[in-house]
Image 1 (cartoon, rainbow, N blue to C red):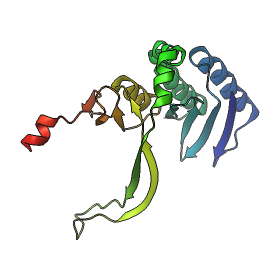
Image 2: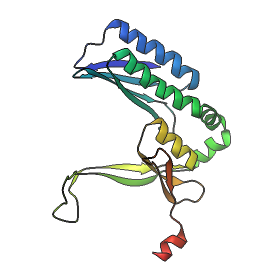
Image 3: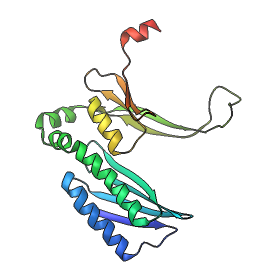
Length: 198
């Protein structure tokens, strides 16, 4: 596993760099065998330190692990961000291990091609826009992966995403999972009956 540590508006000293590398190597290695690269960015804003951790699992699913934390002490901020990732990985260790070791699932995934899609970034307006269509400021090609709902939730948690849009492998429909403000996870699965009623 390669650990890349960088600083924004702060010089990351040898002691902090060693602490980060040791904690991530030991902590992530316990839960995940296939983390290829972990990037850690330490930044400072006024009296607060922020640590962002992004890791690539190196698997075909493209799952990333992501976490951040803030604190008045840089070591405390890093340890909090690392603990979040370790907690996520503890929660999903059994599912990830079974997922990667099951040959049947690997064969099934090899037959599935993702659905092409287009991703747009819309300009944010504090006030009501003058016209109905928002201004598109960026667009790019992407794809929707086919997976079970549990894997979509896992992907959302590990990558610290607000939502995941995917093709539900049990019914081949476009589904969405997202985290609600109360902390629970919502799952949207459109049904034919709902579409007819609308």
